Length: 79
Image (cartoon, rainbow, N blue to C red; front, side):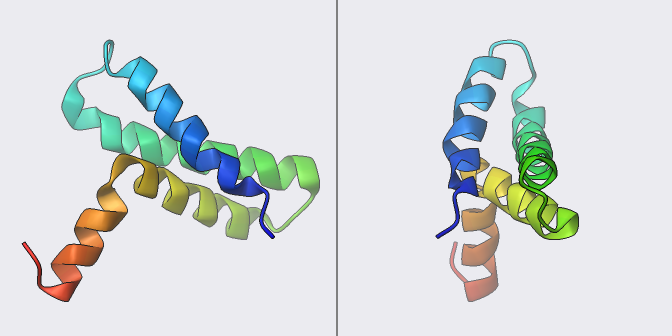
């Protein structure tokens, strides 16, 4: 079981807090960046594969901001 799933709620909380200070068009980018940094921190702390955890963190950040769902629906041909 992966214990780095805490990145999703952490990213959601931080991006919600930043929405008052950052223009809305930058919030998804910040969510991916926060997820990437959290994944990198997880990999550093637990000594895992840095690329793997960074990629997972970026993916979790995209999921937290909704980018992943939009991209997946566009690939499937949905609106």
